[in-house]
Each structure stands twice: as C-alpha cells, then as structure tokens.
Amino acid sequence: MYRLSTMALALDRPGILHWLRETKSEALDHLWQEADRVRKEHVGEDVHLRGLIEISNHCLRQCHYCGLRAGNRDITRYRMTADEIVACAQQTRDFGYGTVVLQAGEDEGLTLGTVAQIVKRIKTEAEVAVTLSLGERTVEELRAWHEAGADRYLLRFETSNSDLFSRMHPPRAGQRPSRMSLLRQLGPLGYEVGSGVMIGIPGQSYEDLANDLELFRELDLDMIGVGPFIAHPATPFGQADAAPTAGQVPASELMTYKMIALARLLCPDANIPSTTALATLNIAEGRELGLQRGANIVMPNMTPPEYRVYYEIYPAKACIRETSDMCNQCITGRIEKLGRGIGNGPGVSPNMRRRARGKTPKLQRLDNNARGPRLR
Ligand code: SAM
Ligand code: SF4
Image: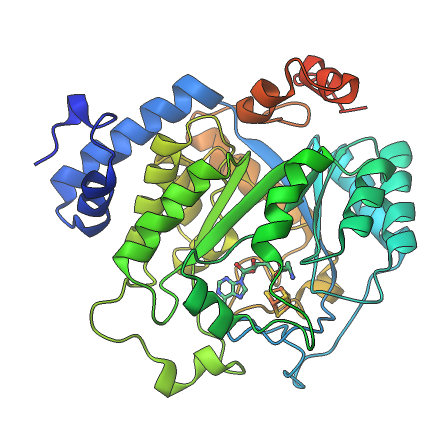
C-alpha cells in the first residue's frame, strides 16, 4: 500500500505499476489530488489554449491505428492553402490564444519551402507561437522550419515497446525507423519538444505503460500528450482479430486519467494537454476531469468546418461538426466553470525555461519572454 504522504518518493517501478493497476476509486482519489496539487505548484492555475489547425490529411504512412493512413481510400483528402492557414492563425490570435499547432499526415505536398513560408507568415501576420506536428521529417526540414520561426515540435512515440511500435507503424519503404532518433534531435535543434503515447493499443501491457512513463522522464519532455486509442474500422487495428487480448491495458477513460496523473507526478514541469480523444470518450466532462487530474493545456479545434470532417483519425471525434467560434465558447466556458484562468502568451513549459537558462541567446530570449505575448 502506498501512502499519500510518501507517494512522490514511491514512484519507483513497483509504485508506478501499482497505480496503473489500481481500480479502487477511494485510492485513486489520492492520486488525482496529488497530481492536481503538483500541477498547481509547478505550472499554476492557468489553462493555456493552443489553436489546432489540421492543415492536411494526406499521408504516405500506413499506421495500423490511424484513419488517415494511405491505404484508406474512403476519405476525401485535402490540403489547406497558405492563406487559409494564416487566416486560421489570425483567428486564433483574435481569440486570445498564444499558440497555433499545425498538424497533418506525413504529406510530401508540405515541402520544406512551403512550411517555412507558412511559419514565417504566421510569425509576422499573426504573431503567435508555432507548434508543428507533421510526422517524421528530415533533420534538414526540421532545422529550416525552426529557423523560419517554429517554436515547438510534437511527435508522439506512441509506445515505448519497440516490437509493438514496428508492427503498428511500418517504416517507409527502404527506410529505417526514425521516430525515436528524431525525438532526441529536436531539443538540440532548439525546439520545445512534445511527445506522448496512445493508451490501450492492441498488444500493450501495463509494463509498457510503466516504460512509457519512464521514457517521458528520460526524454526530458516539455509537452506530454496521452490519449486513449480509439479503433477506426478502416484500419488493421479496427478489425475484429485485433481486439484486445486478456492481460492488456484497456483503452479507457480511467486508464488515461491515471497516465495523465502519473505523467504530472513524474514530469512536474511539463505541459500536459487534456486531449480531444479523452473528450471523445466522455464529451460531458472528459476534458474537465483531465484538467483536474494533472493537465494544464487544451487544444481547441480551429480547422475550418469544411475540412475538419475529413480529419478523421478515429470515428466520432469530438468537435467535428462545430465551428471554431463554437469550440472557443464551449472550452472557455468549461474552464471558467472549473474556476481556472485562461493563460496569456505562449505558455512555455517551466521545463523548457529551465533548459533555456544559460543557453543560446535565442533560448534565453524565449525564457525572458515566457510570460510575454509572443516568443520573438
Ligand atoms: N502524422 C503525424 C504523426 O503521426 O505524428 C501527426 C498527425 S497524427 C494523426 C497525430 C496523433 O494521432 C498520433 O500521434 C496518434 O497518437 C494519434 N492517433 C492516430 N490514430 C489514433 C487512434 N485510432 N486513436 C487515438 N489516437 C490516434
Ligand atoms: Fe499518417 Fe500520422 Fe496517421 Fe500515421 S498517425 S497514418 S503518420 S497521420
């Protein structure tokens, strides 16, 4: 039995596994309270909003879990124009958010030059921090995009179980797996680094989740996104023979809250979102419960309605029929009801600010501007 007062010290391997397997709500209340206390102490009461723009659903990968995989011929593919993306970024700034997240499949149409131009335009025409989430790209591209002004990169490692990962995320033809090595290069390139995992992937064990948590700490992540796996019928993992086997972790809301809480306790200075996948499992209060159990970030969807219906990574995704205005009102209202404030500025993680101290002038500037309206 792990006593609350010593829990922070008891988060060794057996302690982590204990909490991952715990099901009694009275015991879990202690975990939620401790995660909430640590969240408040390290990243404060404010919830930072990141405007999510799903800029393209073209993808050349064949991930066994994702509805955007190249093999899915049943979706209409789109790629937003630079003007559309910049207009969404300006709307994000007008809503008062300090960051846009540009997310897409691995789309060869998003070339080095195209993305660099879009990032430069956002930095001058919308003046918000830019997070990119464009999959596994070359170091040359990542360097050029950072030089163009991109501040952060999000690349989930999905699972620390390398066998499971290579089965569910086949490498591109003729190429070796590159996700982990890219993740380790993003920090030295100057990015604030985000990663994360899905929970309840067919074949994933409690040991795997404990390893995931340890890897979050080892990678010294600035942002950690964890969300439930949701089966998509047009993918190999959406087929009946991929159904979870006995002994694996469930793809449940409860498991997701446990991972959020444990990530907060193990990486107290990271930014942690309450994810859309969580809201998809519990539209009534999934986001709120995530925010009360360790999370401090929400990513309202800013994608124009005519495109967001086609960014179907899993079915029945939350907010797919809403407009950006509706999402803004809904999310800000929910946060206010919790009695939490909405953060100003880019919301740089305390982890990144600590790493930035004493480093390059650019990173020092980022540290100094951490509470200001923009990064540069
Ligand atoms: N293509 C980029 C990449 O793979 O990093 C970014 C876009 S991808 C759709 C963003 C994230 O969606 C992935 O990192 C994965 O964790 C999540 N995702 C994909 N399919 C999912 C599913 N079926 N259930 C839950 N999350 C899923
Ligand atoms: Fe493409 Fe990313 Fe989906 Fe994999 S997870 S199929 S890389 S969009």
